[in-house]
Length: 249
Image (tube, rainbow, N blue to C red; front, top):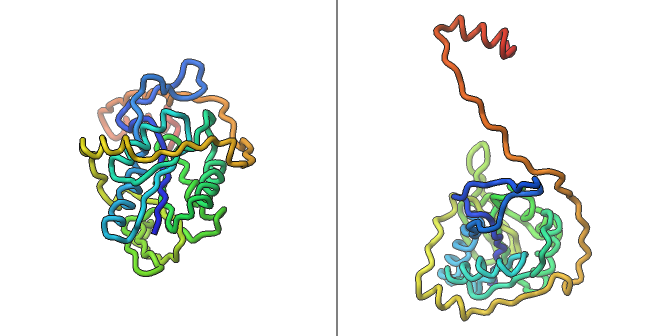
């Protein structure tokens, strides 16, 4: 079984986000970047399936500029066999990302596609579901446990009321949640080996996909600074402030 894992380069989750001076987006220059944490979990699970001899190859794919090669090299240092960069300077909405991934899936012919349930920059949680719809493949989202037997994948997912178990036929799309596993660290020998692993660069224009911008960002602003609270001497004083000043009672 061949597994394709889609990953994304995002601002490191431990970096404080700053808005650009022109309010066109967030500041990314001289900012530490890393692989999206949910995608790291997808990579880790794909590697574990290969180590159990349930998969023959793990392929990474990302969409972005040349700087994204660093993210792919990191994934190959973790253990992925090869990687694909769909090179473009543009940023796309979830639907267009799904259309690009659809083309890559059709070209590489994996039996399983894994993605993080969402990226921490947009938090849209849309691409896995849209990709499944475009491919007309079964899907299982928010996976917290995965087992494979024959042509079926059993996925346990967390829902509001508890746990839900799904049996999904291959080929399939799975999006991963935080509880699925604990990603490994890349060792120095594997980091050196990753430099020699194949990384294919495909220009977006050569894919022959017609993409339309569905979303336009008009303005990006930092949230308002929260005002400090106050202390009151009694319950009656609290009620009066809620009634007369806050007007919530």
